[in-house]
Amino acid sequence: DAGVTQSPTHLIKTRGQQVTLRCSPKSGHDTVSWYQQALGQGPQFIFQYYEEEERQRGNFPDRFSGHQFPNYSSELNVNALLLGDSALYLCASSFWTGNNYGYTFGSGTRLTVV
Amino acid sequence: GEDVEQSLFLSVREGDSSVINCTYTDSSSTYLYWYKQEPGAGLQLLTYIFSNMDMKQDQRLTVLLNKKDKHLSLRIADTQTGDSAIYFCAERSGGFKTIFGAGTRLFVKA
Image (cartoon, rainbow over all chains, first blue to last red; front, side, top):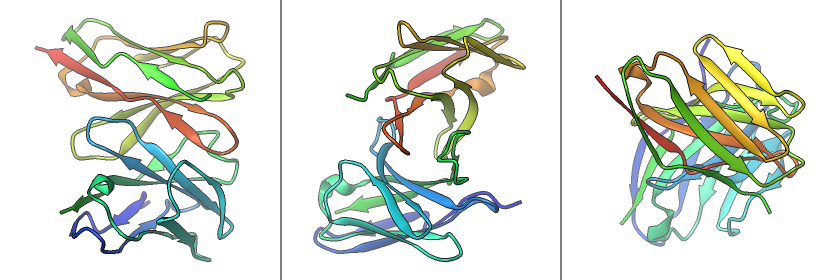
């Protein structure tokens, strides 16, 4: 049973560019959450998608947007990249009960902005 | 507000018990979690506890919850070198999101 799959694994972008990160949730999961993990810190909640809608959002600017598709996969888009956006971006999937029983995380996409 | 705090480092000898502590601020938290992160990897859920429980044991792992003091701990019995990793405490808070601490780096000396 495949877990959470994220692509790409690594990415280097230039300031001002736009990036799209992709996530396929674990089989049977219908909810996708995105987190940003800066070096040496804990994951910070960006937003969560359920039934193709953004269900909750953290303290991130509108440059961060997302989408969930009918097959539950999800994309995270970041526009006008800043150096401070360099981080590990983690996708976490769960069942609709709202992550009561915890997330399954992917291995992340390491984004470097230069 | 919502905040989860953990000590940053813990060093133990192989075979000893490790105790990682965490405090949280949201008294309405319903579920609390411990995750493990190894280098270059995502987070792995180790265990969770519901807020009406005081203790949960799962093989070498014991979770203690003091809801009055908003204190959560993770005890790892017979710690092995393979347990060296970063351990994150997290709380289900404010709707659907889960809030994570900054992580405790566990070093296990052979």
